[in-house]
Every structure is written in C-alpha cells, then in structure tokens.
Length: 472
Image (cartoon, rainbow, N blue to C red):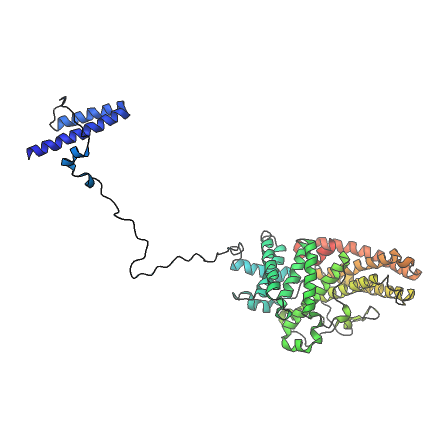
C-alpha cells in the first residue's frame, strides 16, 4: 500500500514539473513565481525543499498505461454513432409548411384606429358633404362599421376619408396613403367586375370623389382622365335616366334613388366645369337626361324625401333659355340645385360656342345665332343678380355652393363676351347685342371682384373644391 502511494506521488511530481517546464518556455518571469509558490506548498505538505530529485518524463503510452490504463480508455466518445434522421418507430414525420402566405402589413392599420375613423367620418360630413352631397349619412352608418363590407363600400369609404383628410390640418400626412388605397381597390374592381350589372353605386361615387381630389390636390391631368372614367361609368349605369326607367324606380328605396340622382348631378356639374376650364367636350347630353333634380338637403339628411321631384325642364325653359319667374312650380332652390342650374347654363354656352362653325352650314341664319346669344345673356344676368342678392342679404357668411354658383354665372358671361369679341366667321354682333354684352361684361367683372373678396373671408376649409378649381 505504501509503495502504491509513493508511485502515485512520483507521477504527480512528473506532471507538475512538466507543466512548469512548459510555462517557463512560454513566460519565464511568470513561471518563476509559480515555482516558488509550488516549492512553499511542497514544504508545507512535508516535502523536502531543494531536493534535486531526477525528473523522469514518460514518453510513450506504453509507459503510462500501468497508471492510467489502456490508451483506448483515455478518451470517452460522446456519441458512438451519428444520429438517425429517420422518425421514431410509430411516429409520423411531417415536413414543416413552407408555403405560408406572407402577411402584408398595411401602414394604415396603425393609423386607422376607431377614434380616427370616427373623426374622418365627421370631417367628411362637415366639410366635404356640402359640395358633394350624394352619400346619405344614415345609410352610410349602417355599413361603415361592418368588418365584412363589400369592396365597393370599402373603396367609397377610403375615397371619403381621402377628401376629408385633404380638408383637415391633422391628417395631411396620411391623405396620400388613403388615396392610394382607394385607387388600388378601384382599379382592381375594374378587373374583378367588368360587367356593368355588377357595378354598384358606391363604385361610381368613389370615382367621382377621387376625381375631385385629383383635380384639386393631386395630379390635374390624371384627374381629367379619372373624370372621363367616372362620367362614362355613370352613363353605363344609366344614372342619367333613373326616373325614366320604371324598373329602376321600383327596385330601390327612396333614399337610395335620391343618392343615385345626386351622384349623377354631381358628375354632371363636374362635366360642365371641366369643359369650361379645359375646353373639353361634354359627356352628358342635356336632351337625354331623364333624372329628376335633387331633393332639398334637409329632406336628404332626415330621410324625409318627397314623392316626386321636378325635371330640369321644369326649372329651365329649354327653348327660350329663360327661368320661370317667381318659381311657379314651388321648387326649393337649394345650394346644390343652384350649382346644377349654373352648370347647365355654362354647358349651354359651351354648346353655343361649339356650334359657330356649323351654324350656317345647316341653313341657320345670323339672326338665329345672335337671338340665342341674347337669350343666354339675359338668363345669366338674371341668375347672377338673384345670387348676388342672396349673398349680400345673408347676415352670416354665405354658403360656399351659392358662391360657387355665382362664380360660374359670372365666368360664363365672360365666355359670352369672348364669342362676341372673336367675331365668328368675320361677322360682327348687332349693335344692340354688343351694347348689352358690354354692360354685362362690366357687371360680371365687378361681381367677380366682390366674390373674390368674399372667398378670402371664408375659412380655408370652407372653400370647397369646386371654387378651388375655378380659381386655378
């Protein structure tokens, strides 16, 4: 037993001495300190300090095997064989699903909180509805919060919010994202539902609203293209002949029919304004209109609609271009209806101007041309005077749509003067026509100056998009 202990002690000294030799080769200074510490430790353990015993280093596994065992036992393998890649017996092997659809994060999802959506709706009906009164509020509220709304409804909602954001101060940074979302859905609907029978009124309303936005806030040329698409869609859906089709009148409720009528009349007004500003051909033919005029705004909002409204011919005499005096039909001339009437006369002046080259080729006489010119001038002066009195008599700031109608009437009088000044076919206007037109021109210029001053008094968000388009 004692011999076994001595043998192990000898091997321990071999190992420690070997370690010191290796340390000295690496760092002689640090190893000397360790040697001194080792000697003091050996002395404390009963070893003889300074005893120069010969050091023996084993040089082969054969010499070390009596102490440490066979060489095969020096290292224990951690894994006897590579792991099996086959499933366990009785277990099913299922590959991970790699075709999981990518989740596209919409940047609007973090913005359109419930409170923000309510704010957008309120902004629309406060600032957009007065000049685009075609979406009935109660009807909109029934589907606005429905998570399973149709794609046309979702598109209309984004279009409404786009215009609402453009007329606010706190949502200017998200209005383009709203616009792109609405435009993307609209373009997709043209592919998904090319059949006219599948197109809904919400789709047409969305196109009209985005047209207004593009003309005033985005790219004007793109707005002109969108205007053409909106007008053609309204035509394809027969919105200009709602009350001439008995099947349409019986198929929808009164509030839905009124919303369809207003969609047409808003598109009709835009058609005339775009034609006046850019000289483009008008889409809607006044003689083909079979849709009643819009009901009063108060009836529209409260869902108390009259049984029947009048046609445009009930307000304007198509042959003489004169308005019925004292309103014998009892029509409530709402601001929206005033804008429709002003746009109609603007369209008639555009039509009158375009007929100049062909007037004499079909047997027309000079007297007929200037008689028609005088009728238009008489109507415009009368309408402009009525609107001017309405604007000046109000205690508060006038309705922006009344200002818009007055602007259109006076700008149209300038268009009539351009016809006289251009001397079509080298023919000068008769003296009485020339004097009347000069007086109308002076009146229109003074009135436009006054209206411009009135517009500057309005709040920035009260100036509707129609007025902005005329100012440009």
